Image 1: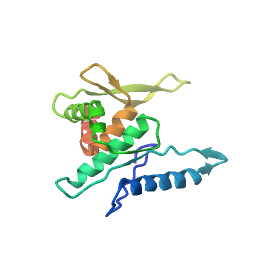
Image 2: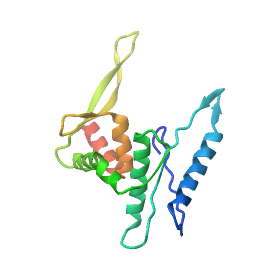
Image 3: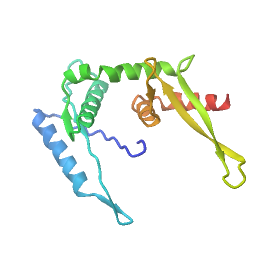
Image 4: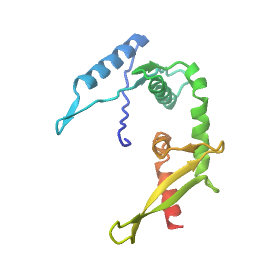
Amino acid sequence: YEAGHWEWLIVMPCLRSSASLTMGMIKIEEALRQNQLIIDGIRLHLRVSCGASIFSNEGEDALYGIQSARIACLHAERNEAWSALFDPQMEELDQRLKDFDSELKLAFSGDSTLQLFLQPQVDAKTWQCVGAEALLRWRRENGEWVPPVELIAAIDRLGLRQKFSRWLFLAAAR
């Protein structure tokens, strides 16, 4: 889970065709859209994206099947569709994502490109600094600044939360 984003994995064993996956995604999407949340009179609209992958036990590991479904889900989100079935061509389209992921993994080693800035918090009445807010920034090798929301999502997606936490505590201590 990340703020505003939930991810579930549903395993459907012994499927004979992709039609069952498509029907499953349709039913999930309908169920989530029909049961919208209303909190304090405010209707919350759920954004649903489903990605699916057909996985065979012949030479592929389970992680490949999960990552394939995630790639399909990202493909659906980026194309403003609600679902997508994995196609190997999606991996080629997501080369940018692969480059991003490998560069992020390297960012935690040695000479980090991750940066932590402290922004003072000032009392408006006394003009005294009462604290500081830590701001995470990452500038990629190509000069692109990555928004913190995207960075944290990638850290979670790649299972780097423990490495990130360690880096964060060390950076804050420095």
